[in-house]
Image: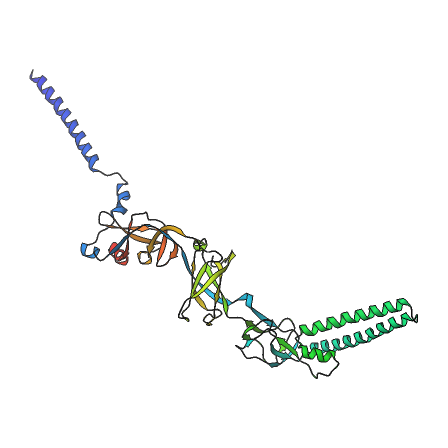
Length: 388
């Protein structure tokens, strides 16, 4: 009887030990966290700072905004290629005189310099010969027509005389065009046609367009080669070209006709401009696309090769999240991030992807959602506090 009791008690004891072990194991499993729980909740738990320091921070909520992106970049100034040109020497020979100073305003056809050229003298002589031959053969053709009327000569002789006169006229016209191409003025050509002596005639380098003489590339006595030697650069500097470098992430916001603003330390006020062309090629070295902007330059503040700052405004509205520039920081890998205020009172670093510049802020493409609270003032302090 006693043995039965002991056996029962022993069985009870064994069962109690098993139940106790089960309870202890269950409790241990309840208190333990999954292996990835800390990694999932850790970033959102963030870090905290004292209440006095927290009061100095400025936090704003992230909301969906409608805006026009502004692409901020840099560029260089050049002459307007549609209103500037380099003047090449029309003849070979040494420079006799420089007729205009650097910076002079010239009209189309104005004389810039003179050249003592044997080519020019040969062209004048050729025109004189062609003019004289044309006059002589024209008189012969007229005389043969009169003789033919009286049956003094055959008809084929009349036709031959007319052909010779026409050929002489063509030679004269070609010589005349050559003189015009060499820059001979109308008064000199008229004197030559009249058979008058015009004395030694020099070739003249003339301005092909109206504008300002921005470069003088020759000096008296310098030997020129026809069609090869650059002599002057004439440009209308009332408008200039600005070539801006736009990178891939901003290229979608840039279109032909978009408004632009050019800023330079040399001018007090920004200069407006219009995007005239977006290149179809990407620079293989910088991976940037050249965007050409036409800008008025009535005050002359823009100079060739000047380095400027450019802001190009997109022509279409977009919607997205915007954060102030003061909220955006960079990590050791130069990647952008912001600090987000958590409901628990802590702060968390949030990696973001930036879009184009918009006014005093940036568009955020990824990393934030509506309702997030971003630290805009005091973010640098948080970065220091996080590292402690």
